[in-house]
Every structure is written in structure tokens, then in C-alpha cells.
Image (cartoon, rainbow, N blue to C red; front, side, top):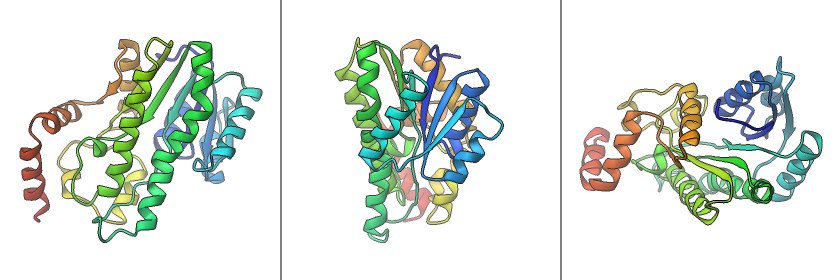
Length: 256
């Protein structure tokens, strides 16, 4: 376990990766605050775990986020680790996907990160310690057809977090930008219910615990980018050095 603090905050803690991270930390005896829009999901995550404390929070509401963070720190103490897991993932062709849906994705996936950053990171910087973990995605590194709206949000997360990291080098805060490939969480169902790219069936489905394990390993090594498996590491290299070859393969796989 690479988490040496006492208190963690997780957005999107009502399901998926956020739920698993919360339960892992609670099992280690940590106090874990979870935010989500779903009261039922929050309650389910916390059931049987005395160390998990939950708040219903709309991550797109900056004022509500700041108020909830203040309540967390008043109740549990300073936040030592932040996981920004909150996200939605509907897919579709860019000209066919509703503009309001794409805006909502940006508000949650990227805007939520901005809001939680403003509320949590200044305290970490002032204390000279903490773990700041952003969930981007390989979809933000390796765009493909049918994922354009979602990929744009995750590219924004990646760039925001990278600049944030470089603006606070030597601050004592450890930063990680996580770029998982297709991972077995409930978020996949949103994509499958809308439009599912064939490219996402090309690699190995990753277990969410493997992603969380990779985060701790990378934090301990002082590595910012977290590519959790071999496929994601190779994909990042191909995107950088052979983008034309990558797009040729995408067109062949998708058939248009």
C-alpha cells in the first residue's frame, strides 16, 4: 500500500473504480469520504465498511463541492489522497451524438476535476504532502471513432493534470494521471448502450484492481503517467510515433 496518510476522498464513489478504491482503503483502516450524485450507490459502497463516509454531491457544482470538502476536513481531518473517478461515458458519432450529452460529459468528466482540484489541492500544497490522482483514459490518448465526445473530455483531463503536475513540482504532493484501457466496470454499460467501437474489443479487458495496484506502484516510483498494462504502454507509444498507422488500423477494424 503506497498510501501513507489517514484520509482519502473519492469522487464517483458510488460505483465502479471509486467503490473498489474506497473499500480497499477502508479495509486498510483509512477514513474514506466518497462523493457521488447517487445516494443509493453511496450507501451500497459504504455498507459493511465503518470507515467509509458519504456525501451526495453534484461534482459539476463548484460551490457544493467546496462546501462538501470543507465538511469532510472538519469531520475526518485533512485530505491526504484524492481520487477523481467521477465520469460518464456515452458513445456515438460526433454528428449524431446530442450536443447536450457531450456538454454534460465535459461538465462532469473535466469540469468536475476542475472543481475538486480547486477545493482540495490548495490544502495539500499548503501542507506539503498528499496524493492527487486523476483518472484520464486510454480513450484520451488513443482516440477512435464513436468515442469522440468522451475522448475529448479525457484528453482535457490528461492535459489539465499534466500542467498541474508541472506547476507544482517539488511541492511535496505526488501526482498521477491514470490512463486505463478498457476496464471491467459498470461504466462500460453506458458505452455499450449507445455505440460500441470494435476497437475496444481488440485488447484484453483489464480488472479494476489491477488499475488501482498500478497507481500505488507508480506513485512509489515517482512516475506521473500510469499506463496499467503492456497494451496501454504500447498504445501510448504508437499514438506518439505512428499515428497514421494507428488510424489505418482503426478504419480497418471499424469498417468505415
